[in-house]
Length: 178
Image (cartoon, rainbow, N blue to C red):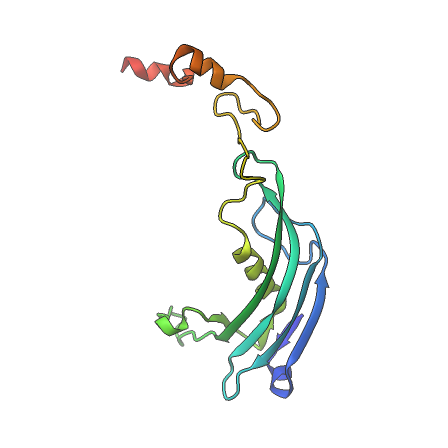
């Protein structure tokens, strides 16, 4: 849905949509939209300006890789958003302009309006945790053999304990002679 400045000059725009998986392209290769992205909200011009005020609520189930064991893990996103977008002020020569500290919480748009899918993409990515884990008790991948320690007890940690030292990667043994 396109949030047009021209339409917002006449009235507040309301949206209530369910975007099927694949309608928004998530650029992160290990991130998949599993459920419809449900969004409800409004968009309106702030009186006397060309700034767009977008607020609403979104809900979606995403799937990504666990950072410890690399297995697929569901990530529920359910959040409110309240955003302000101002017209992009490029200089006449196309040079970059320094943003004032007061503008740090404002997004920017160019052209006759704003694409709702761009707003939703940004909000979903910002809602994702920095470290995605399938569970707090995830054991991860064995650094010696590469097996998922949640599924297989490879025994590599016992071998290291029996010898009283960590298991060494033989590819680095050549460096001991230098």
